[in-house]
Length: 125
Image (tube, rainbow, N blue to C red; front, top):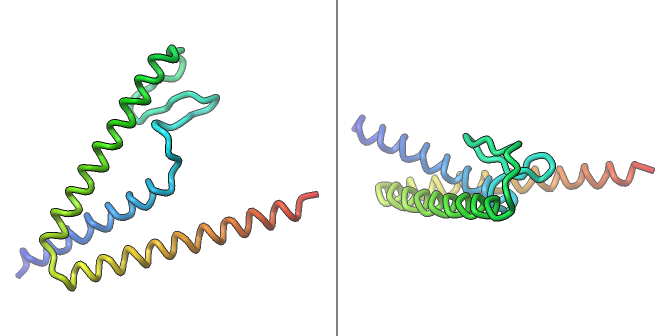
């Protein structure tokens, strides 16, 4: 019983984290790597600033980053499916309800942000 509870708790945490990451990634810009200041390519753990990469090398790096992201997405999807296969229908329903609730909260926050942005624009001369 205790072991099952631990597995359930771990599975719930992992699925929740994966769902959160998925939502965050879905909202992010659709481009490989992150563009730093002045259009510089910035990657976690790799310091490329100041190296004056050629356009060809920069494109190769972007391609590698995109391939890595695609691999990560496939791994996350497989992990999500494997965990969901362990859960009962009630647990799956609870996870789905939490995900929907989280997505609704994110959407509400985005709408409030957009409203405030529009109000600021209207109040500026």
